Length: 365
Image (cartoon, rainbow, N blue to C red; front, side, top):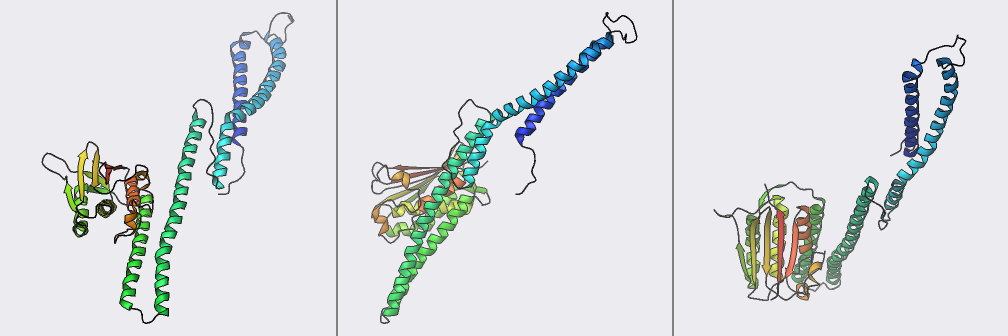
């Protein structure tokens, strides 16, 4: 935005300091005149030059007052310029840091020393903003790189299958179509997950009152055939009763259903080959509505658990080879939805194997 040139803040403060100082001097002269000189007799025409009179006092006082006013003005300008420079020095550092950030350098920090005041508070807030912005940009770059890699794989497979079919007309077309359908379905699922993840990150959704127990039941009902196919016992507990209030929260019903579906699907897929269990529980705990999904499975290394919410992370090698590999965005999407709803996400490995995922969301009023 182009603006017309104007006075700097330092010059404005300098003029303000000098103006106030000159005004204070003028008021002092007025006080001297009103309360002192007016009570001295005016003997400008008299012969008693040795006695105190207003004429003599004014003639001797006026030049000294003019010199004093000029000194106050110069002193005010010089002192105001120095004081304004010292006061605005922190703002100069903040301006330089903002300019560097605008040019793309997000690693710079002000780190202003000294006791707390308005400028240092602004510098601390700016440093915190730069830290979050740098982390967000790094996450977006890593996510874009991973997403492009993941999307490149199904497209490359599709091109290879089409090249093979063109070079070998005798190849079974039914098998080719089936494989292409599987690859394209994975690419579509990945694209939809990326769009949903972007939507939840922006927070552009309408909030409404949502019952987490109903969301959990709908997610479990949708995935019940998959659980039965794998021999997994799926159990849903919680819900409103005469002595227990409903676990309600405020948010997007569509996003919260996708969150619960991803959690239950992840618990089914990353379970035991057969005979495993998945427990989905909802409850209202004070001002928090809780959704907890617990599943059996293989033991997870403690250092692996914090990385499961990152995009395109998978818990075990087995997940890459079974018939439901997913797109690697399950828990990352859950984390994004929970964050968009001002909630908390806690992942804890079970001692006997498996994982306990606890989602805490603010209870709806």
